[in-house]
Length: 209
Image (cartoon, rainbow, N blue to C red):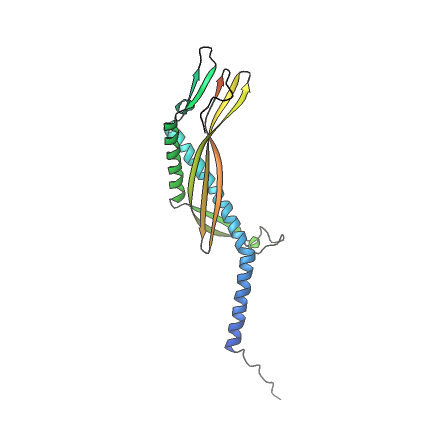
């Protein structure tokens, strides 16, 4: 007695199974894999942008040989006490513009960040996290930069005041991978100049904003 052969699955049935499989994969991808890749990309973009900012500021300060006296003037009375601390706004605005332009150029000039993600991490779970070979994902970076000067006055001992000038820099970093895009807000401040002022300093003496 011959056994009857099972008829092959109709083409429509194969197509239905394929479509169901694709839907399941896309759901898994969006729920599990996409957030991990976006988080890893945003983190790498933040690291890359902070390094770029630090490099640009240090290069500019070194190139122009900027010192505290280039930016700040301390006015004293006949008794040696501080009457006012004034800023060279022209010099500070010029320096800020050059730094912002340099950072912008570095971020937008074919800047890439390579993100290495273990396969196990993509599929989630504590057991698989960080395990398996790493997949290299290259993200292109671009961003908008804004900067403002800020200053602090703090006691540095008896009749001594430490005056520090910072540049507060904020950037919106846009990172792009095929199929992914994230925007990461990065804020950092860098010490531009400092000095210790000897003599009594009134509570309100600086016109820094």
